[in-house]
Structure formats: C-alpha cells, structure tokens
Image (tube, rainbow, N blue to C red; front, top):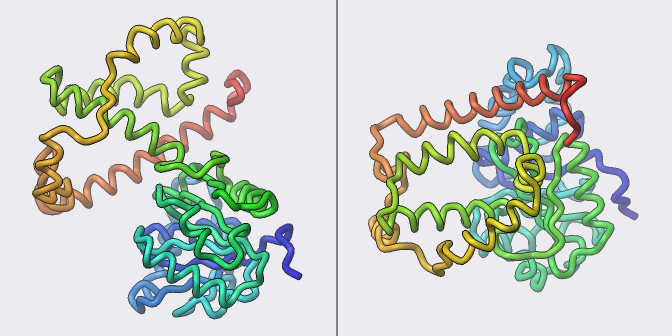
Length: 325
C-alpha cells in the first residue's frame, strides 16, 4: 500500500516555465523527480533550465557549491505520466485550461495508486469541479506556486470539497520539505487567498483611474512606496498590529469601506483593453507602452528583485533583535 508519510519521489507533469521551476525546486531539496511532458522541446530544455536554477540558488540563494551534486541522477524525464506508478506525490502544472487539466488527471488516475495525492498547480480554477470527474476525489487538491518557484517561499495549499485530511496533510508536509511557508486554504473558492486580495486592490486601483481620482503612474508609485515596503516584511494583519492596532484600523474601516468600489465588472477603459487583447509587455501595449525586449528586461529585473528580498530576509532573520514572524 502507498503511504503518504513517505515523500521521496515526486511526479511532475507539465514542463513549461513554472513546471521546470518546480522540478528544480524539488531536486534542490534532495528529492527524486519523474518529469513528464508531451512537448519534446520542453523535455530537452529541462536539464539546462534546472542547471540554471540551481546555479542561481548557489549565486543568490545561500546554497553552497556541492549542495546539489548528483541531481541529474535523481531526475527521470518521460513523455507521459506512465512512469508515475511509483511516485509518492503528483504535481500537475500544464496550461491553465480546465479541459486540458481534466484529461491529464484522467491519465494520471490510470497509473497511480488510489491513495497517491494528486495536486494541480492552479491560480484559481475550481478544484471541486475536477473532483466530480475523478475516481478518487479525496486524494485531489490544489497547490499554487509562483515564479520563480525554486526561490519564492510562497505556496497555497487548497482543499477541495472532497479532499481528505491525509492528502491535505501530505501536501502540507511536502510544502515544508520544499522550504515553503504554506498558506493553508480550507475552502475552494475563486482566486483562493492571494489572488482575492490582489484583485481587491486591482479593482480599487482601476476605479480610482476610471473616476479621475489619479493616474496609473501615481497609483503605482504610491503602492510601491508604501504597501510595497511594509508588505515585504509583514502581512496585513501583522502590519495593523504594529502600526496602530485593530481598534484603530477597525474604526477607519467603518469610514472607508462603504466608499470602496464593489463593481462586478471592469471599468470601460479595461474592457477596451480586453477587446484589443492588450497584453502589456508581451504585446507592447498595456497601461504603459513597451518596446521589443522590454518584457525580458522586466522579467530579469523582477527575478533580481526577488533574490535581493530573499537575501534581506535571511539577513534580518539572522539578527538576534529581529522578531519572529
């Protein structure tokens, strides 16, 4: 019988940018990986992507030369999930398309044992809808990673309506083994936690522009220079505690909350961007204009920023007078 206490071989299907990041993360923690993708290019590029990620961990992430020696021997690359039968945990990371994911889950169920946990890396697709199509819905749940997965401590672990406790517990243990600080989500709802908080901010920011209160650059600068500073150190509840307390913020909520936007559709200027398929740095047109190559520059800058923040966090946590989170 499969035991969820034993998490040493992880199956990963879907080897795009985020899937490759996840493979690198698992290998960096000394575990074995069976990595699968139908795309031959993705399979061929995976070893180099893993090598680059591990080199970044040595250069920026506090790892040492030799920490990852032999990782190639712990990586098995396949063109399907047929070799997942001996895996202790499965992570699906294919395209964010419900039909594609459902087909992948069906294939996985034909291979793995009935109690092998199967997770989907999704930022918001309804887990309970997938569970209704599965033979063993209790062993299914969500695990939301973000890029670069081998560096970011972020992970959401989401319980679907039928997810059993042993599966949820196994996912939590795996998250901790991978060095994550898991956000445990006990109910399947659109956007889970971090995206719901993020989209609440996006809605209010868009409304402030639509109402002529402010502009894109002013709002970006305001958020970057306030929320962007303290949110890298604390979350919202800790911040309220150390900057006035719940009573102070609670009184302000009574005044501000009734004035916040509660629209259930985007303002007209964003709908126009939807109709034009404006894709920001990818297409050259978004809230700002972009030149060719700007997308790559912003991606590189973001990754460098992540490493700097993680270095700062390590330094702060090493200080005797820095409080525990």
